[in-house]
Every structure is written in C-alpha cells, then in structure tokens.
Length: 374
Ligand SMILES: *Cc1c(COP(=O)(O)O)cnc(C)c1O
Image (tube, rainbow, N blue to C red; front, side):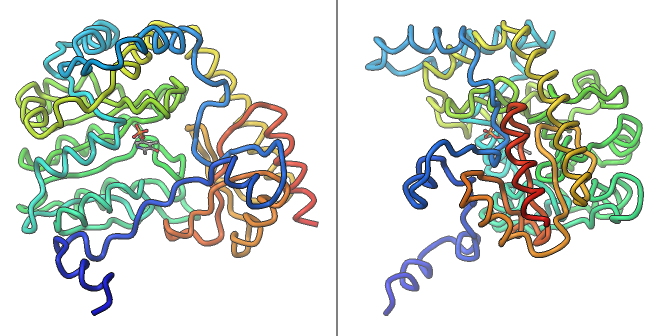
C-alpha cells in the first residue's frame, strides 16, 4: 500500500482531512529561487521596525543560561503583564505564541460531539484546531460586500449559530486576513446572549494597533462574563514573532485548566525575557502604532488610486481586491522581490493581503502595483 495512505489511516480522524497552514514565503527562499536580492516581505504582518532594542538586550543576557530549563511558571513575565493590564496574574496563561493558546483551548474543550463557531473568512487556525479535534464547525457567513463593514463578522448570525453543543466561539478582533473589527456595543450585546457553556475566545492579536474609539475594552468584562477568554501576542506590535510568546486572559479557574494541558516549558527563557522587556517599552509601541496608521493610509490611498478596492482595516495589513484572480499578480510581485500574501485558502481568490511596511517599502509595492495594473 501507498505509504501516505498507510499512515493516514493510522492517524486520528480529525488529522486525516487537515491541510497544513501556509506561511508567508521567507525572503531568503525567494532570493534563492529567483536569484534576486533586497526583497521585501509584506506577507506575515510582522513589525517592520524590528524588535525593540531593550528586548534584544534582554534576550541576549539570557543566552549564557541556555543549558537550564526556562521558568515554567513564567513568573516575571506574568507579573509584568498583570501590572501592565491591572489584573490578577492567576488570570494569565502563557503560550508559545498565541497560536499555542488557541490549540490549548481546543485540546481543553473540544471533543468530536461539540461545536465550534467562527466566521467564514476568519483566521484559519480556528478551522484547523477544530478539525484536528474532530469537533463540528459551524461556519458563519461574513457581512455582505456591499453593506457596512464588508467581510466583517456578523454577530447576529453568530448568535443564531449557538446551540446546546457550542463549546468554543472564535471572534478575531480585528480579524486576519480581513482587517475588520467588531464594535463594543455589538460584542457586548453578543456576550449577553451567549449561554455560559459556550466559551467566547476574542482573539486580540492586533489590538494595540487599533485607534478607533468604538473598539471594545474586553478586559473590563472579565468579571461579568466568566466564559470570556481574550488572547493576545508579542508577535505583532511588540515585534517578537520569532520568539513565540502569546497569552490568554481568562477566569482563573479556566486558566487553571489550560495550565494542566500546557506543556510545562512552552515558552523559552530568551522569549520570556524579551517579552518582559518589550512590555516596558511603551514608547516603542506608540511609535509602531503611529507608523502603522500612516502606512495603512499610504497603502489604502495608493491602492485605491490604481483602481483596487480595499477592505477598511484597523490592523497592520490591508485586504485588497485586485479584480481578477490574484495569483498571477502575487507571482509578478515575487519576480520583482515583493512578497505579499495570496488568500485563496481563505476563500478569497481575487484578493491579496498586504502588510504595512516602512514608508519606502509601501512605496515600492505601490509603484509595482501601478505598473501591473497598466
Ligand atoms: C498572527 C495572529 C495570531 C498570533 O500569532 P502568534 O505568533 O502565534 O502569537 C493570532 N491570531 C491572529 C488573528 C493572528 O493574525
């Protein structure tokens, strides 16, 4: 028998249909394949400023101790987060990136007979973790393209998808790859309606970038809704994607469950040190936020000027409708050393997701888009 088939039959049922996650192409791979140099990557929503200097310094200072296991309780990082967010450290669970947290939630709460609710164009990891656990996905259609908040989450439809069997609800705020957000009133109304057996995971990976007044302060709702879990990360505005640090904020009893499932040493020492130092550098965060707001405007206006529709975004990337199958445009950009993200696997074959870069990188992208649209 074919070996692929042989092992597939041995695998857990949920794993058999699983498609691997497609990451953005790394620069060095592109440069090797195409024999080019000075490529730019606007494909993985990374912070173009690079890491804060204090984080780099803190990680370096840890390296002589690399023979030792990290602090499995994450004491210092949790204490710093608790002080920064003004909450009890018992509400925190640390993850190897917030992706790890999403997997922990699935491992903790999903079985083949329960249901998971998420949006059709939501972050793909929700689907992958639900499938791997063999749980039933209730996929909710996004807002229509011609209404307000096109491609955004429709929380009324989310509400209608809830059943006795619902165990996890994933809300990405803002969502990746659409950049759309859920406003405070809509989310609060939804929370009031959710039964307590359904755990609502609000994924706030990009929250620090959001400048809108109607963005919810979900931290204030933790006491009112024990079934609320907030996930955040150091990968995005804190510029530590390679370090892999994320966290969940929840009811302490729920955190205690996640900690039973969590691998004891899931966040390395340099990662913990870098995150703790980065958290203290809010000047860096403010600078990154401003750079992003300017870059988002530059990209949106520039893309609209060459006839591409953009989806209003509050994150560090923008979803662009190129009005034709996007793969050839993606390929043409690769040939000139610009990596963006095709999103056909999100059911968006005519769109590209473009991360906000430095002003000159955004310019280079816009120049090429203008050339390609001719
Ligand atoms: C990037 C991203 C994450 C987190 O990534 P980690 O690096 O694992 O923290 C989580 N959710 C969304 C929606 C993202 O785009």
